[in-house]
Image (cartoon, rainbow, N blue to C red; front, side):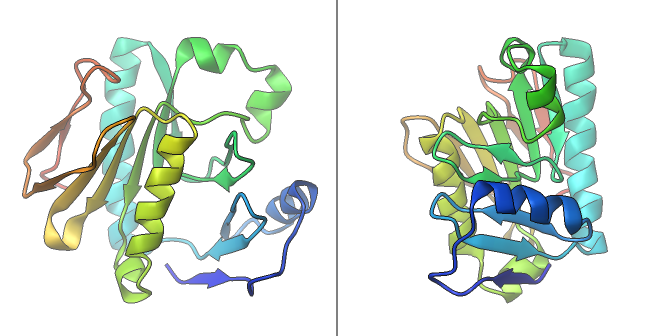
Length: 193
């Protein structure tokens, strides 16, 4: 996935971002809290396959648990700091989702998910975006996300981000626990790492 960042100093409004998002259906876009537009090309096959495995496992658990909603990478959330971000996989508690109006649910939901996953793709490594993804994970926590996983398949490492805690790094784990945020959810990493 090649990322193009608009030059520093170039800013757009949230309204202009929404117009661009409607017009440009082929690219994923995000908007930083400072108005910096980030355009990302679609993922390649390897990252897309792994991401679908992540969504499938979380969706299966969520369908049984019925305590929240799962979202894919095409969903843009308006974080409390004003950034528009698209986690690769995300989950929101049902009571929080149901507090949104239909218009808010149909548009870019104005809240941070409770749980997010970012999957490091081969192009993230090639384009040296790993530190950007780490900063994005911290931004999620700063805006209310309770638990996040940054998954780096090429070196079989997981960074676990928890609200009000130090980042934990796991090497070659076989599973991950959803802890008390996703009670009973165990992610099998067999097809991911």
